Length: 198
Image (cartoon, rainbow, N blue to C red; front, side):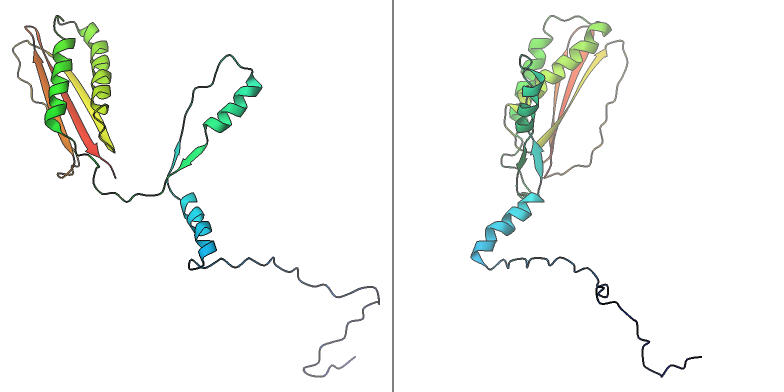
C-alpha cells in the first residue's frame, strides 16, 4: 500500500500527444459605450427607442396580384413604426362639449326626422347612428381621446325610466355629452363619453 504525503496531489500520467482538458472560454462582451461619448449617444438612443411603444400600420392586400407578390407587400405594409414615449399628461386640444353636443343633436334630428317606432328597424338604426356620430366626433380632431357612444331608443308607453352610468373619471380632461330627440311614439337618447388616455 502506497502512502501519500500530505498536501501533495497524486501525479497523473499523460501521454505526449494528449493535453489536459481546459474549460471553454466564454466570449467576451463588448464594452457598452458611455452616454457621454458623442459617437455612442446615437446608438444608446436607438436602443431606448427599440423598447418604446410600437404601432402597426395595416394596409389591405391587393387582390389582383399573385400570392407571391402579396407576401412581399404585406411585409413592407406591416413594418412597425417606432414612437418615443411622450409622457404627455394633458391633451393638445381639450374636449369641447358644447360644439360636440350641437353636432350630435343635428345628426340625431336629421336621422330621425320622419321615423316611426319599430323595434326591428331600431336595432340596426342604433348601430348606424352610433357609427355616424363617432365619425362626426372624430372629425373634431381631439387627440388621445377614446369615445364611447350609447344610443337608446325608448318606446313611450307611460313608463318612467332612469338611466345611470358609472366611470372612473378624470375631472380635468374627461367629459360627456347628451342629445335627445322626442317623437310621438318614442324618445331617442344619445350619450357621448370622451375619455382622455395618456
